[in-house]
Image (cartoon, rainbow over the protein chains, first blue to last red):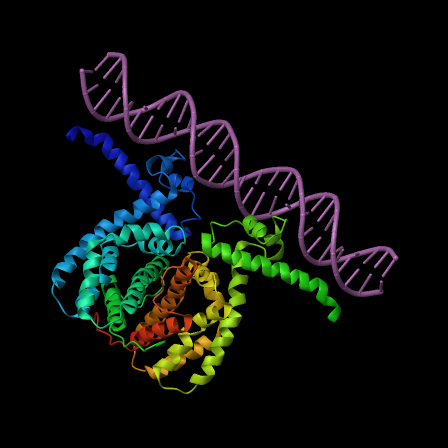
Length: 217
Length: 217
DNA sequence: CCAGAATTAAGTCAGGTGCTTGACTTAGCG
DNA sequence: CGCTAAGTCAAGCACCTGACTTAATTCTGG
């Protein structure tokens, strides 16, 4: 088994090269504006079809990038979740929801591209579905939802769904904004990812606990 | 001057045809996934260069679509603003911020495509700037910001900026989500655009008035 | 009623795209 | 040591794209 390393190492290396080149180009220029050829070249592969060989279609490449990060994010979420188990404080559950992505970006160290990539993919009419498939299969996310439900039992199911969507948008797009600001050396409202997550948490807690003005009936 | 009508009418009609065809295709398939050719064809123009003739580059086309809607949205915002002048209730100013887009979409009648278009353009790394230029020149938006500032004088400037960004993301992306759900006949949390705006308002008010947990110093 | 301009139609062109093909390189194994 | 198979490379294919050119059509102003 140890003999497999040499070749397999090399393959994994080029796969990783393609993955990170694609992530960077996608974030900077837009997923659809970048061709597989350009990704291959940026990854230092003379072969213009390297992406096709290793990943298949562009959608598969996007999925691979998403999956790579999601495993890290998932483990951070699991760790936070362990600390919140049984809590009846909304803030604890919101932190489980809000902190994993910023914390993951902090771990990666500057510069990062994943947040911008993520925001784009989540907004694109055809790529969106890929992201949903990748991230909604997370069991830990389900546990957070249940935890929040227990904290806010009288919140109507519709409103709960609505505010869940809102939280998702906020987390992804605010991370993308901050990441972009960092890349362009523009001033950011917060000094670091942890503080940014705190600001996000303040808002998301307020959001979940906001009174619901009656409509219709 | 009345004699101009026949010719100019026709030209404006094809321009409008191109504009709405582009808006629909962009929303459904993605701005960059649709070529100018496809837009021209979808608009019923035998000329594959009709887009180029009438608008120039794709960025110009995007700008034209954005501008068309922004004039309507701006007038709705101005009307709401008149009712809020002098108020010290956060909710009044939030309504000015939150209601124009949903109300505009309601006026257009189903199906609409602008919200999805808008969300994409705002997220794209190169198109984003166009949208910012188009929408940030609005003087009425400035007035809303000032109104909110007067209601929340002790909120730090950084946090104010941060929460302004959040509100923008929420308005655009939640509208896009609802629009997509409408297009796909998926159930929506709210029965109509007005109620959706109310739900959005509840959250945005809570967001602006949320306590700020101290960070750093 | 007509000359001239604006708009639409139709075709062309160079360049870029995804995908496929076949040759070359190299690791692993008998 | 030579064979096999996986990975890499380079070239070619059919197709699509934006940009440009030319012709036909339509309307305007005189």
